[in-house]
Amino acid sequence: MVDMVPQAGGDAARLNGQCQDVSRMDEALQGAIRVQGDEWQALVQERCPHLFASAPVFISASQLRQMRAVIAAVEEVVGVPAPHSARGVFYGYDFHLNAQGVHLIEINTNAGGAFLNALLIDSQRAADLPGTAVAAADLEQRFLAMFRNEWRLMHGDAPLTCIAIVDERPEAQYLYPEFLLAQRMFEHAGIVTLIAGPADLQARDDGVYCNGRRVDLVYNRLTDFDLQGHVPLRSAWARQQVVLTPDPAHYARYADKRNLVQWSDAAWLHAAGVSQSNIDVLLNDIPPTKLVRAEEAERWWTERKSWFFKPVTGYGSKGAYRGDKVTKRVFEEIMQGGYVAQRLQPPGERVVCLPDSEPQSLKYDVRCYVYDGELQLAAARLYQGQTTNFRTPGGGFAPVLLTA
Image 1 (tube, helix red, strand yellow):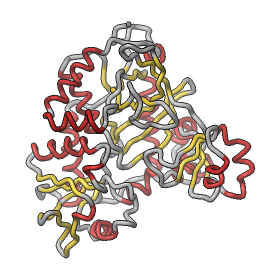
Image 2: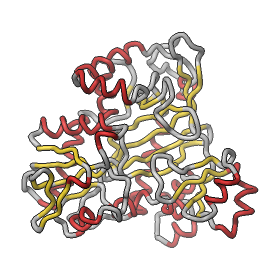
Image 3: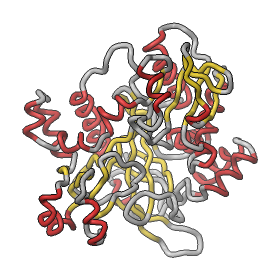
Image 4: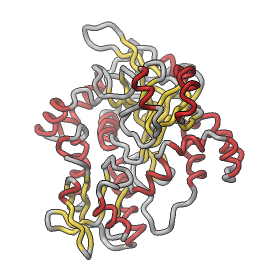
């Protein structure tokens, strides 16, 4: 065992390759979970026992600077948002960190996990554990200010009184425990908060209603990103009858994976007038990404082992395939269109030591939760397999600690 405090001259890779004594970290987390009540604790244990990882992930100051630089560069590319419009809460910038550097794999505009990771990080702070978490101070107040700002941008000083957290069959969602944490936070701040499915919303002439109450703001967790399957909600948003965050415009600007094709293309970036310094950042830290076309199928099959195939509008790793794992049948489906290919950049690895078992190496990525260009917190996801899955013993969300 080694101490959790990074020693002088130590580096993130070395620490990630060793077992640390995480008993105090686990004890503090379990205490924070118990505080949420028996029902919430049982829900987490029964539905998502691998929600929280068994070890932290260490990163260096240089890696953090690189991730911040990528976030800033993307902000320049997407440009200034329209005035009096929501900015979009909880953008998730997902990075792979390896010996070759920091690599932006994708951006999500309804990234889950921020409230869960805030619970995890705050439990460490409350226990005065060693290590420096990559997170803003007082995350709950930061989150509240973010949602209030989304409302203020469109409605000025009018009070925010009612929020609806909306997803398909929310109580059946894997991250439903997070919805309950968000609801509790909002209600402690005096904001009525409803957890609802889209069918529970009614669009009326004077706004959107849920359970007979007018909704001021919808915290959108739907994965129908352009809301083509939810026309009443999309229409209410278009008529500015409700603040919707994130909304279809946010997804189009940030998370459509065709954006990665442009952001890794030097000619496109120059034509778009992006500054040379940010062009250098994007070309260095976004793996080359290409649209997949059926007429190039022979080339893609030959080169497939060097690429990762992702659906243009995919989410949660659904329909995503490593080229070296793809079967001929699935490859032929990919060639029908609607996919991008991204140059493979393997994720980092973290050694995890579970009781009564040999040390094992898990993969990890780092998700930076960002609002209006500002990094709120970073969290890692530990896993085995092709993609993150929250099904791996010892895996799940992990705190990201900055080395000395």
